[in-house]
Amino acid sequence: MEQPREPWDMTPNQYDRYITNFLVREYGLTRAEVRSAYPPGSHRERWWQEVLEATARGAVLRPVVLDRLTDGEYLRIAHDYRSALPQSYMRPAIRKMNREYSAEMRRIRRGEGRTCA
Image (tube, rainbow, N blue to C red; front, side, top):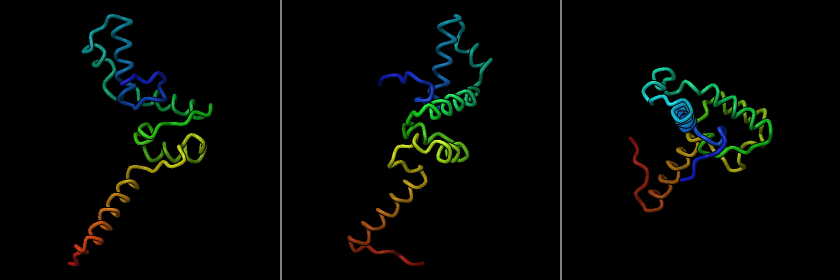
């Protein structure tokens, strides 16, 4: 898989790995030294700022990146930068509800029906 080139095109975990690898490569540190100085997740705020800047410039975010946003972050982008969202994007909870509904409809069509308690 090709490594994303822009920070806003990465998930928070990918961005953490990218920063860790950069520090190891550029400064000759060990991964353990980098992790002790910058624990996993410590770059999330910097990543979020990169995402905001990219959306302000007109970038369209990938669904995998949007899935990693907190509800507050997502709502801010949806409100301020609507064009950054792919047209058919749905939050993970909505996709889950759609899958459950579709599975229930399949069971009903097969005649298994809904069981009442």
